[in-house]
Image (tube, rainbow, N blue to C red):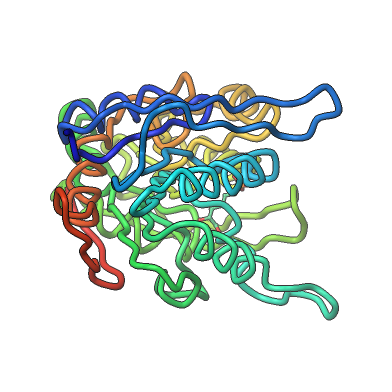
Amino acid sequence: MTTSAVVVAMPGNEPLADELAARLGLERGVATVRRFPDEESYVRIESPVSGRGTLIVCTLDRPDDKLVPLFLLAAALREAGAQSVGLVAPYLAYMRQDRRFQPGETISAHHVGAWISRSADWLVTVDPHLHRITDLSQVFSIPSRAVHAAGSVAEWIGAHVHDPLLIGPDEESAQWVGAVAEHAHAPFVVLRKTRRGDRDVEVSLPDVERWRSHTPVLVDDIVSTAHTMIETVGHLRQAGLAAPVCVAVHAVFARAAFEDLRAAGAGEIVSCDTIRHPSNRISLAPAIAASVRTLLPARGHQTRPMQSGSSNP
Ligand code: R5P
């Protein structure tokens, strides 16, 4: 009787699920996830999971349509006897809603974290947007691992960009661009950003004249509307720098953001593969697999993984 864990993909997550199964020697499970004509979700686990560890792969960009079927699938796995249910969510949604910005709002990150913690036994994600919330354990009551993309991003920059100057578009990006710069042994600067609304962002530059001979590389964790990067690209071009390479860990790219960024004068636009997008160039599957390995129950045993941690590829 096999006791390896079973990897189940939510729709669209099959490539990472396949790769995790292959790298970790796990079984690829079969599940049906679809919608009824009235738009309610239908889920069914078809593989035997009784007594076995399981993990669901589901990146959580555009999360509202994904969370209900995800919760139902986790419930279905438990009801089918799964020993544990892990969640691999390379992009973790709602982490930017980490404060009550206006009276009457709620801190959505806490609620979404609590819902996920009720559904899953452990979580692996990639570079969650930890800003006012500084550790995943403040949001999730389950063991969690944050994979860091910095090493892989630095490797890509080292192989593809001549004489890079890494640029963080705002203070919040400092932690990511600083880590990438350290791995890449490259200089970096962090700019100042003022956000006046969802789509109204102003970026101010310090003197970058002395970096003229370098290739500017913008690095941010998330590109959503791309307004942060677009503003920065504009300022860099005005200052006479070359078209900057734009690197995002999470390629959310809302609506026409990708095309808008191109039209604004960006050079190559590159992302990690936490969200499937034509700009994906940097694979994080090996790093994610290494973190998943630390959380899987030992074959045939129930283990209690450590609470929270992070890992660098
Ligand atoms: C800021 O909090 C993040 O690090 C990103 O700079 C931000 O999420 C990018 O958003 P947008 O692409 O909508 O400007």
